[in-house]
Image (tube, rainbow, N blue to C red):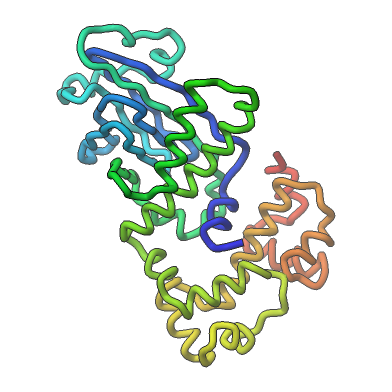
Length: 303
């Protein structure tokens, strides 16, 4: 797998959920903070997103997509909402479940609102450095993959064709990948867009993520990247924030935690898959990193 896919897969838990929201007139709803990531797709109309904590309001128009990767609480409101109205926002669930606020004079808006469940205990640094709000406005010719996913989502929701129960979660998963890609392509702030634009560091990361169980050494990894060990260590550490072999250890243990949480594979199998020569070696490293044995971790977190 590539780094972006792995970074998302490491924290994704279960299936995404979504609701279609149609409102008109003067309306204002609050979405509470969430242990995951929230997203909104504006299918028609326009509205305002106001992040908690005094963040600048974001105007959303038709075709816009917004990701709240850290589950920040926020308000959605009609486009001309005043601060006093924002403070009186009603819970999103009330509008969703009862239809309150859906009727009223004035222009309407239709949104797809949803959530991704995330396990933040081992968040990859790429995901950790996403901003509180990632707003990707609709632009002709911009991010064609993202636009295609949005169009497919809108069509799937409108037509409710056979197979939709499988198609919709899969499209929502694609949406998350395309949102992260688009943020990086637009020069997102943080280290990881620069990391993945550096050919040496990218080559090393690709090798580690493609085969984390391989018997990697600093010399072998440098050869894979086509540079000296000193050059790799300097560039990798400067960009990623830790030396290559330290990153490998962290990533192996992150993979081990995911396997323990999501499967019933024997500890010996998990050890082989993550580059540890024996269950004892994995258990020792895992306990040092997590402060808990693999067996206890599995018992506490197994889905």
